[in-house]
Length: 285
Ligand code: NAP
Image 1: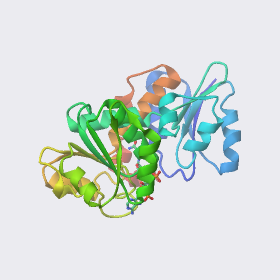
Image 2: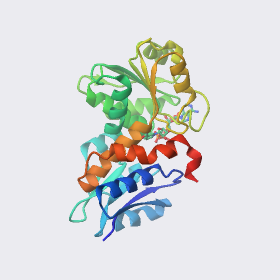
Image 3: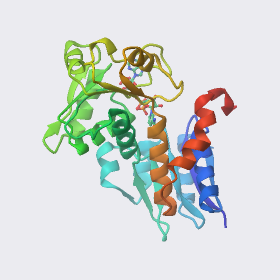
Image 4: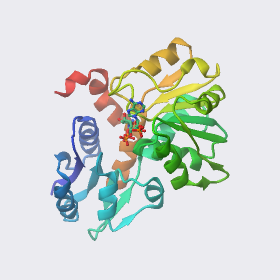
């Protein structure tokens, strides 16, 4: 029987996940397929119920259904509960569905790679307070960062993020308005600056004033299309270490694949498979 995983979302513009997971199924010798299901909200409960059936390994979940699908699972792991979003679902032997979040470990892998050091003890500033920013902030707090500042265009969303996550360890997120003096002060002492907004992908421009960053800082942009955003270009022109969101994308996918199949170590296979799409977004058509 072909084992199935379906990605639920709307719109589904990208094939990156499908290409990575299908390559991993092939490499692992598993008769499996990762299918894309662009659904209206009313269709989501039915698609989740279907994934309880035999043959299913689980689901991938993307915007705008990361909260809705959490409410349809039998259980949601503590990390995903704290983040408030499920980006994958694992089907148990008995058809029970568990909501998980692999964006947080995916971010940590990507961020520590560009930082060249553990996140523990680092000063981090995040632009954004949406779903991805919540996973990033949670990963930072769990990793034991020394300071975490969250700047958002709509400051109320940054305040809500900080209140929702609370203190983990000794650190809590400090909410500020993007572009405020408080945000600039945090950028001026940051070890790592993260863009977790859609700016650079959807809107032109950059969220982090790169000129204010200390000389040894690193910049991590969650956006991976285009491969080089204005933020990354400005960081590299200043000689700062800089990375886009592709390693996070690969790391979160490899973590999900391991949870579905028990087969780990697929990041390299996934990286090779998705490389053409990352190099040339036009190759998606
Ligand atoms: P989301 O929940 O819709 O949040 C969007 C965020 O962007 C909000 O903080 C929003 O601020 C901000 N924003 C949008 N337009 C802006 C503008 N013109 N100026 C300033 N801020 C603006 O989206 P998300 O799911 O968090 O995704 C955010 C980004 O992360 C996307 O580019 C996505 O592709 C990327 N991502 C990457 C990975 C990966 O694996 N690499 C994983 C997840 C997400 P307001 O609150 O003020 O609207």
